[in-house]
Amino acid sequence: MIRFNARLKTAESCHKMARNFVLGNKGIDFAPGEAAVLSLEGELMLQCAKGDQGAFDALFERYRDSVYDYLACSTGDATLAEDLCQETFLRVYLNRHRYRNGSPFKPWLFAIATNL
Image (tube, rainbow, N blue to C red; front, side, top):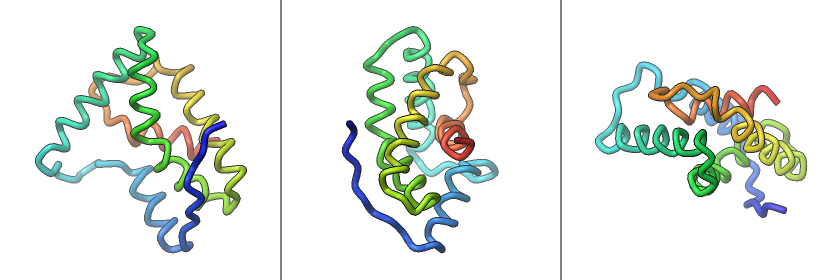
């Protein structure tokens, strides 16, 4: 079982977090270094699509707390958020071949979490 930080946020911060995660970086200029993160995530997804478990693990480690926090805010239930977080990453793995290379990873990830 995955251990998460059980940090439930206020409703206002949850709304802001959800808006930022789902909208992603559309229409926003990247800060220095952000483009490098996007290309790293894209490269990790390409490797993941080829069956590289280490690439998937790296994405999981990078985003599990953010996904959990988002889901905990959305549901108000820490246990349900853990289950939904695991389901989110299972769907990322099962649908890794559907990720469009060059697209930002984070909005794709949080769209999956939102649609559970």
